[in-house]
Image 1 (spheres, rainbow, N blue to C red):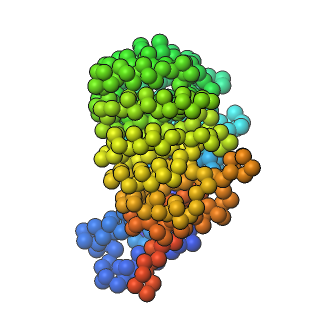
Image 2: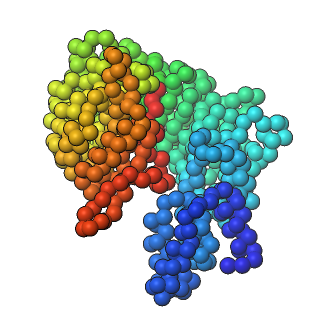
Image 3: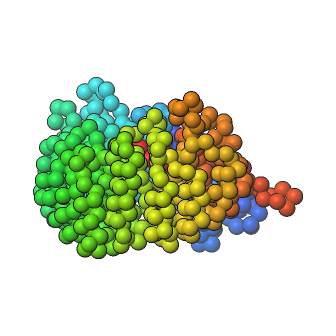
Length: 509
């Protein structure tokens, strides 16, 4: 590959995304072709081989180097490289990356053509007037070039403008939208701009302003036939109320997923009304809703009318309570709520959001036993965060839930051997994350990271071949396997996947 083609790849792939790697994936791919006798540019057989190889390349830097192997490899690697673009705030030089990505997509329509998901979770701020004008121009042109864009996330306050929203709304391919829903200073965009979006299947609003919330019933009417997922994260913008929900949710008869976080004015009244009209809901999250939320009233109504018969996923925050008996009663109501649900995913969080709020009291083993006994044949994922559970409960989950694949739990004072014995019965476990705590003079403290890693290594050595990821505190490792003297050796290596591990995305309102 020479001349203009090489220049495009160098600028659009290497320079545009600033991805580099010490791993010579290009050399490995070239070596494969030499050994196989195939040429990477010879017909359909080589093309299919290239496609199959690249499906297993996860790191962006390696994909970028694959573009340099041949024209055939470049054509497929470029698709994989650009179809899903992510920028998170913790990326090195995240704001500069956004500039370069937008410049590339705005100036290279043939690359923007491949983009199906665009996630900008950081964005340049504190810009001069000219710089702001320039980045809006770039973003607007980039969006118009992404004619196959299906999903867009712009979660940073101050990212959007009216022109950008108009460009997104004009994309017929767009089905999923996630935005920071504060219109911003100086009228960067208006709530009415959202009315241009029709035919969406998924909408996520983060910190919506009052004016945006008040517009939701009108917007719902325009998307009633298509919207399947609605996520609203309020936290510091508590404008969503029962009245707003009662006016909008009946219009969304196709809704299968409703997630509310930090909506402190929402009670069981509006949720109960929604569940009366919507019998097909499959995923429900009610995290940090009103302190007046009556779980018993909601559970009793659902159980008596056999509702939630299609619910496979639920996520809840346990309301703060000093009395153990009140917590156990609330958990009993949750179990009643799920009586007729084919539950696959159960997530429970303590209210608060920081490690210091982890409760010594935790969750009684009997409550976990009742939950597991009711859904043992269907549960694939259990997450209990910031609430201590016993190793007895952990072992019971792994032993009884024959389909369990993912487990996120918090434990205190558990030895490595006991922990490994509890987890080894989980024959299908592939993703485990343990928040490991210790009692220091009556105060809850996280284990030292080195100690936590040693425990995870011991668990990985003793668990089955299904285990792929294991983590503790804020670390995640991929389980690596090698063979030595006929024995399988399991070690912990860095996580190299493109998908952000779930444990990094579990911050709740």
